[in-house]
Image (spheres, rainbow, N blue to C red):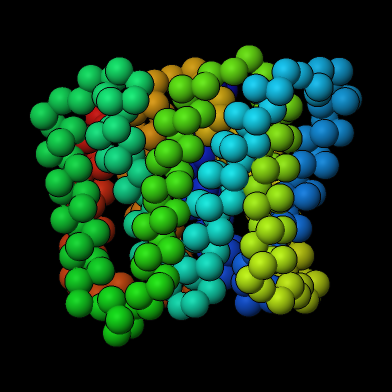
Length: 282
């Protein structure tokens, strides 16, 4: 069963980009995320109680998990949701943030003591070349500048959080760690709402279906798989599966959101995907 976790993760994580669009069409991005992670935190709390896991632990573990949640669920998802809400195509936002593996490979040597080889540096170069081809001259024209910046901030956040999660390696049960991370994400978005936005959610059937997908299949499913893989593998090995997410997301966005890529975009996707593959393959 564990061997198919990466493939399940790819499908679920890619689908999250697609269901983001109907969510932000019916709410502001930060209110939607605060609502999502309130439910997720409650779900993991109830599951931890049911399975008799120890919830109260030392202060250090709690703070570490809260901070990881701020990075994963707060800055990363906030950046993705916000960029899509102001017009970033779903597939291109996915391409930017899933350059994470090459950044993780580049930084794992310095922060985790994992060796970074020549082929990994080659993959890094190809990954960013592919992203440059996709972004091309569209920034400021068909692509919103702020959306591109928000996507790159999300990229830095998910890369940092992956390295951080691997480095702390605390001994919290997975459900308890996920609960504190969800609390961290919820608190982050509540602060953003209080300072910057006017919160609203239209609880339409479309919103409820898309939000249910992100809560149950992504937050409870895909994110738990990711935390399991990070805990049991090297950081660079874990993120190797991410090279399949941009093309998978692009196909889903084409099927369900009618998003179309031009020839240069397709070449860029191929080059970036090849770069991530080279950087992360055994």
